[in-house]
Length: 346
Ligand SMILES: NC(=O)C1=CN([C@@H]2O[C@H](COP(=O)(O)OP(=O)(O)OC[C@H]3O[C@@H](n4cnc5c(N)ncnc54)[C@H](O)[C@@H]3O)[C@@H](O)[C@H]2O)C=CC1
Ligand SMILES: CC(C)=CCC[C@@H](C)[C@H]1CC[C@H]2C3=C(CC[C@]12C)[C@@]1(C)CCC(=O)C[C@@H]1CC3
Image (cartoon, rainbow, N blue to C red; front, side, top):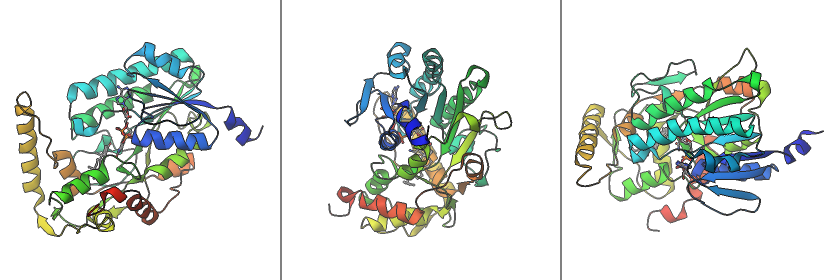
């Protein structure tokens, strides 16, 4: 049987399939002839060939029907990092992931691909060309990251080739692209409120990003297959990035200028901004029972804006045959083009 025919028979489930990354993945899987089920707390779109199961992943009974017959499950669900809700992160990312694992085993699923995050090793200080050998952050930068670490550990520990259940975690970083609800919208909102005039820290700090549609074309090819999880390569996590480190402020400036806004140019000292962000965050936590406000410049965002954090995806290239399919240049062009409503004056 050729691989094309084999793929036509593939049934898969995307948990979190209504989200930004999940929906790109669903579209790529459909292109490749997969039969796709989506499990999500909401139905984000309609597409022929996709069956939606609306429910909370913490509910095993709700989850089970969505997993029936699936050979591979992609887990891309998480509360938004912006929610900053420790109890919610724990319930969904930790307890919910335990439930997902249990339901996968009950439903006879063979492979589980978790979308983890490269920030599981980030402590707010420089990371340069890091491989996956870097230990998990001892002091994770926020509650979101704390639970992403626990989630990744749970999934990798559940890998059990003897019982035919294989797990793998991919760790993208700074995902962007059409329909992204985070990076570009936050950037434009800040620019419209006059907050993107400033460069935090120094201008040379480099980051790696992951362009969503291209990242998922690769993933949807089904390269994360059982044969990659050999005894010499068990329980792996893989950095998946555009593989072109870029200066953080240059990247933001290219998006801003592409959308008609001015690039940031005034410098502010990193420590000052980080201290202010921490203070604002504390204030927001203390005042939460009385009023809700969400500062744009959270300690996490400031730390990301003012440090090097670029990751090597050599392991994914070597062991999974990963190749970024689109250059950063092209990814930025396609992203800018996809947001006509966010252009200056629109
Ligand atoms: N956006 C980024 O820059 C990065 C994201 N990631 C990870 O990638 C994954 C996908 O992220 P995005 O697509 O950006 O997020 P998103 O917020 O667009 O999508 C998440 C989806 O999960 C669903 N969901 C949340 N709680 C649920 C629950 N209890 N039960 C069922 N569904 C639930 C949401 O309804 C949403 O559709 C997440 O695991 C995130 O941690 C990792 C690195 C970077
Ligand atoms: C300083 C400022 C307002 C920058 C605007 C851009 C930021 C909103 C993004 C730059 C790097 C992004 C990023 C994430 C969210 C959006 C940014 C902070 C994540 C925290 C999303 C969830 C993850 O798992 C890690 C990401 C790292 C990079």
